[in-house]
Image 1 (tube, rainbow, N blue to C red):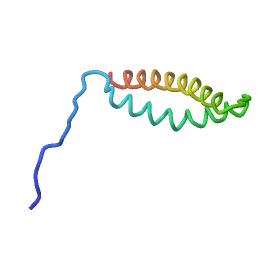
Image 2 (image 1 turned 120 degrees about the vertical axis):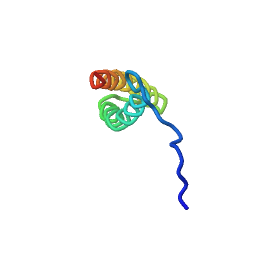
Image 3 (image 1 turned 180 degrees about the vertical axis):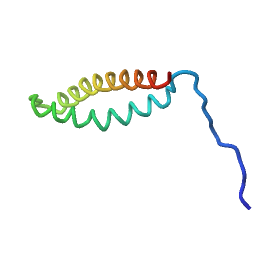
Image 4 (image 1 turned 90 degrees about the vertical axis):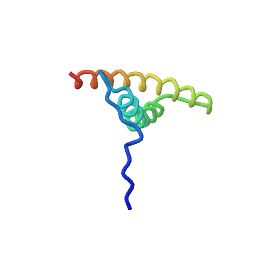
Length: 80
């Protein structure tokens, strides 16, 4: 006998759906940002693992921020 139940969570955002923005930002940053950081790392001389990690964090942060702003602006434009 099937159990009929309500969904665990529902959402009806007023304005921009920030959950969607965060999820799309996360996925896009990995898909676009990781290859971008790898390509940029090829042209920069990084002698130590600490230098490589520092470079990845700095460039990745800029990529994440730009992606987040772009996704938010897209969501805001599509909302209206």
